[in-house]
Figure 1 (cartoon, rainbow, N blue to C red):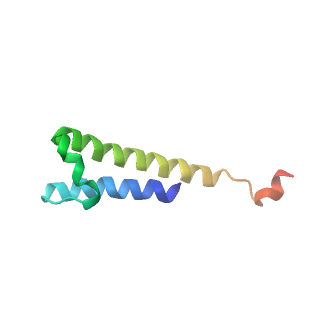
Figure 2 (figure 1 turned 180 degrees about the vertical axis):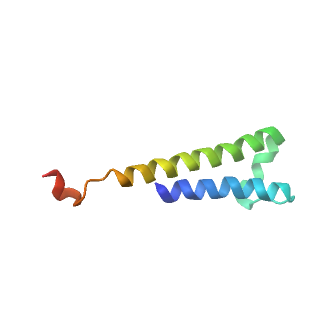
Amino acid sequence: MKSIGGFLLLIGLGSMALNFLGYEFKLLMWIDAWGEQVGWAIRIGLAVVGAGLWMYANNMEGQEPEGGEEAAE
């Protein structure tokens, strides 16, 4: 889940940066078809959801008991 969150965060932030330069990822070229505000909402949403997933997964890694399954027995 951490890698998915990192990917979404990277795509969202990268899309924001590229948009300022007049470019866009081919995967996200469709988002501006609904208008500039909707495109920015999708970019920001990708970054926020990605950051949330990454932080959640990072937090869950720290809470695992040492020893894995053996600690549960």
